[in-house]
Figure 1 (tube, chains in turn orange, purple):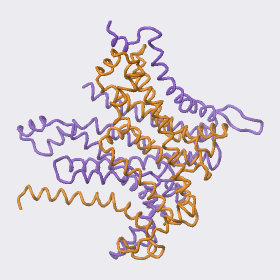
Figure 2 (cartoon, rainbow over the protein chains, first blue to last red; figure 1 turned 30 degrees about the vertical axis):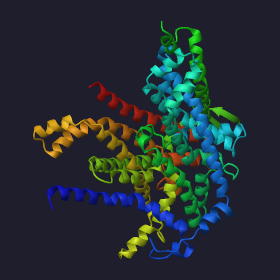
Figure 3 (cartoon, chains in turn purple, cyan; figure 1 turned 90 degrees about the horizontal axis):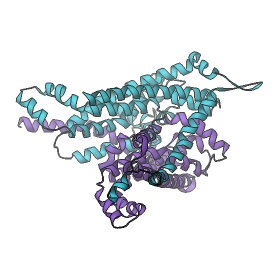
Figure 4 (cartoon, one colour; figure 1 turned 120 degrees about the horizontal axis):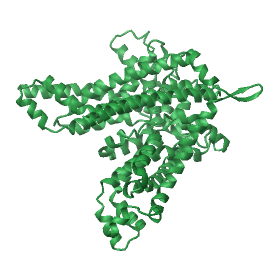
Length: 278
Length: 298
């Protein structure tokens, strides 16, 4: 074997352990969600060759309340993403395209970004007290409001980048043709940044879907509890139903993985903005 | 002046109306939900309940210095952040260098590595509780199969191994992120410096040290900054894995703040502690940003 071939082989061999380390734990959870209790507690634990069952999924989403949590998670994620996108895109467009006095473009952009940098735990105490005073605890509205604010700086920053990269000629042409400024924005600019808008939306959906701390503090009843809080509630109980918990966790990651694969291209840009964790 | 000029440069007040209307909702949301809570939190931290009513004082801040739980939680946070950051950086850099060449299957490998990092932290916690469970977990079960005595390996339930376990879980989840950012940085480096190094007869090690690392420095600083911020405020995974236990062994500052506020309902003291964390993250990010800017100037 030539030197070069050996080197290539070595490269592949070196890649196997990290690949196993990354994927095996997730696969293991998947097996627990599909194993009967007997297989779950068998020694040695079977990685393969057990009889799969969907009982835990039925138990979690039909018998128990995980269906409600799933619905809450979906409503909160979609509503907060929509709000953040509308409010954030308008601001981003203004910051990218209009020349404001006192170098406000730069100052405002940086200020908006800096609000993203607060550790969540710093605002969780005052936001809990505010929501309590407004009688919004245990409502989806409280989470939608908080996640909108949470995603907003990210939307502004991402969309501002997309707007800046867009050549101005097309907008100018639309204006000369007699379009209003709003008309130019909606008919010319937004269709052009649609891929960026979609990527930004997916990031917001993921962040809202994954968020835990605010959901934990603001929702304690089935009326508004999201999937992560529902799962966490089962983990810290005295008697843990491992199968049910794994089934719920498996369902929680499906939309995320689909989304993530769909926007691999934008991932580095989005993640460098600290999109995934708050 | 052509019409398009006027469109983009606001000269008079009427021209400013539209951008003001566009920006106002965003500013309102951020003022109400980021800035106001911060100010509210300051007032909460400066108030103390006494039998004679609420009084203003620095008592909550004075308490910090003598609270050994707070100091221990701080120490845990630093140990956790330093250990996880070191591992994630070295592993992520190694993987990025390994993958920074045309090899078949790179896309598949990259996509697979994304999986841990995209998981909700709660799910990452669940995954590793299943792996690390001393009785039926995959790790001990598999070790037993190879004849290892796993009696003392109770992982998250052991005061000695619990911290190691939660650090390992963070490394599992976030090394892929470091890898991705550094790989993108490596791929942005132009070919010319490498060709020059080749002509100079530099060894591989010299090329790495004098060409790759300096050119990768901005990516390295950014990824270290982002990871440091996240590590210092870590909450979710540890909450699921150990709830700060056993005892106090894995209690980080965010967990201690949460417990103070929502188990002991001492909101004032929790707010005071959260400002220490805020100050700390601000100082550290300022240092990183200074390094970043120094790089840009030179």
